[in-house]
Length: 275
Image 1 (cartoon, rainbow, N blue to C red):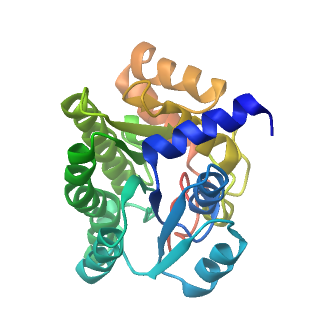
Image 2: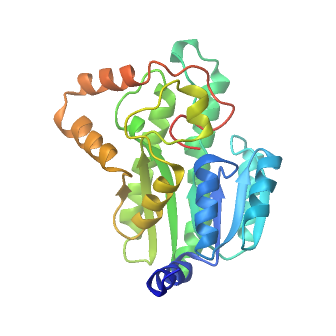
Image 3: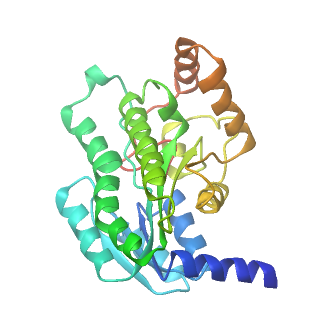
């Protein structure tokens, strides 16, 4: 590692350490966040539902690690994550956990969209409310909310997922504005297709501009302190500008519907865009 890179990572640890929490950490993007944050010297609180992948990930990390087996789709799971984070000096939270029910809204059972609301909206709100005040008191810290390009317009057949991701992005942007000058940085990472197990389970073909988890993680972490929103990848940045600024709304919705038409079965956890 070069001296310049080592200094950058030391500076990151000083600003966002000594501990970070990754919610939704068992695989895909969550695991990539954990690996990169550990490489930058942060100790980790890893939160996920499945104990075996969580333990396997923790065993590979070079820094101190605490694992929390918790379902963020429940009040008990959110409370367990809160208790674990309260026991350390938490300087960074990554709200990455996601659930994406796939199919027509009118065909869903209520438990599906209720779970999406809990995991994708309620959990980030709770984590922000629990941990941001302590960061503000210390005048340092960061909060990352993983969002999706699907949340920039109506996105059938992942309508509920897209709506919850729009909520997360707007929440992060508002928090970014409220906390400017406090020493605490907030960013939403608006990702397109990412090579995660969740995407592989739901989409038959690789979408143009698909990125690796490492690319998305780098964009998200590098976005801290630079603005309210980070969009990884040139293809996705161009797509975002075209979809949101140039195309009529009905055309943008039709395009995203066409791009999502081969989504098949919903994964047990995670979503087609985040892991």
